[in-house]
Length: 346
Ligand code: UFG
Image (tube, rainbow, N blue to C red):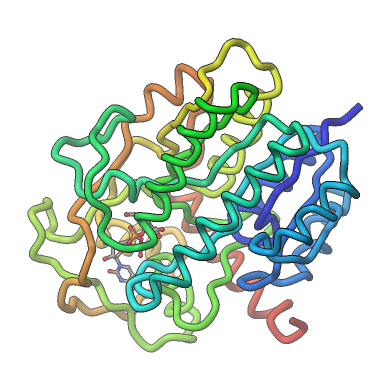
């Protein structure tokens, strides 16, 4: 019998790609999503890709009554992947309570419900943001947790602490936090991808929207950093590689082979690329010319961060396989497909 996995935030960017990989690996998926930053139509497109429509429940995980009813109805869930959270760094600075409330209350509610329903296995969406600006690169899982640069970052740090404390107190609980570096790209089918509401905050959606003429100009936030070309360096990971790491984490939890109660892994490529490298690569693989200019630094940006992935490679047997070229091309194909075929229908 296929194990049933609850995916919170499964209609979102990383969530939808993970649902595809889970279904392709024989898992039965139930999505809980309040569609605050996603569209119900993604279910049709997941079905197109995998031949199977995930079960879907629309509610907010801050609502404890709805969670209770949910677990009563779905009493055969074996594991949970918790994506549902707000993620805009700038908004978290201007509206911190929104972030602390949503991101922390939903996690605590979920853990309480898992506890009451004897569900032991959780995979949590964490972020390299927990490292702040590391003293040494590449950053390993043993690198110190620095002060976060924004409330969003604090919610990830606190969430990990909640998992550490809960797994040590409630002995049957096991959790794996995946610390994502910078997820980019889209599914090869171009049927699902990143769809930010309004003006994108992140680099790659801003690039694809600019190339398509939806934005006039891309701003490169600073070229006076202490890096080879002066622009910031990040570890850009293809979202499909990232999605696959969740399947492996779930399989590991379900196998229960003496893993520690709480584990955390860097999920990146191990390679850093500057903003200008990303732009140049995009121009090369898509044959598009990008209109961009160098502007001031963006407040709160760290200079550089990229992952040491040895621990994830060895312990999980997972490795990023796709290149930056493939990721940028897939992001471009998705942007074009979405604007030409889907945006007018949603
Ligand atoms: N950038 C630009 N122009 C833009 C957008 C971004 O030059 O229009 C630059 C940024 O300055 C940065 C790089 O592109 O150097 C990447 O920026 P993103 O906003 O795409 O990603 P961040 O690295 O800032 O943020 C990501 C995640 C957050 C997470 C953070 C941790 O989106 O969730 O990493 O560092 F908290």
